[in-house]
Length: 398
Image 1 (cartoon, rainbow, N blue to C red):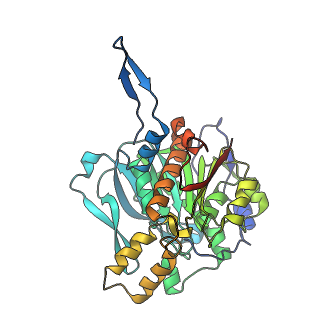
Image 2: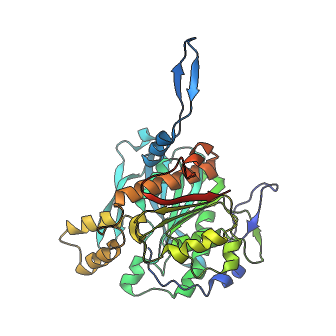
Image 3: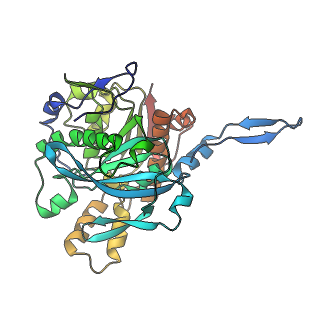
């Protein structure tokens, strides 16, 4: 398995190799998952146009709202760790005119067909180049369970690729085919490497997408055990074959308590940590506090959403609403959804729409800054300009 090559003068990090996997082997998961900017102009007394920088409120609205692209989606397959066949969802930017008349997409959640927000199938990708973002689902999750974010990122000009970590999905939970958590911890970073390689090398299904991808700018995002995966993928721990490293990490409600201290200290990829203060599955202490204290990356940004729960970073509330309107959903599926929904949709938690709004703002702005160099959005990661009633903590280190 190879990564992508970059010019020799670019900063390098370590490849995901057995030495890193050995550090991860003891890590046992005990909890389940889980538009382009513009500037205004005013006419002065002389008739000359003066440029006015967007306000923080304008930038926030830009990031929280849908971007300038329509969104295409397709399901592919990639060979992951131990030659496992991984279903992979790919969201990509589409020119709006090319999406007209295209078929709306659905996600095949077990026992329930879930409509996408507005993604379509069959539309050709816009020409790009677009940065690449990998999304890693939580334990017992699925690749498309955070469509509120993955579709949103595609609308803002990112290609987003999300694998099912086979052996650690909702389907595996329902069918009793779960792998041990030790095995899962070893497989996940290698799965990430496999999907990046496939997306950037023109593998089957990616032939027309690869030319649109900016392989020089790659991020890994993830929720819960996917946050564990993102942090592991961005570490430089352990000797081994060098590879050209990631450009950004986003860990949502990360499970990190079993990641070794040395691994966390070796993470030098710019990192955003987003958590919920009401999360009882991967509580802020220690799962956010440890990487906040140990990760060497700069910038390192931390945002704690006030009263958000573990599933506030997924689409579980929409799944619950849909399941309650259907008579053909099995009781077991409905019960599983309701159980997950307790940590996202219960009274007393931050309303899910607010949690999603803030997550879209934070993640889209961080990735636009780190992958596209759009420094306008950095102010929204600053405690003063980025303040919001829904944020209990917003802080950073540079």
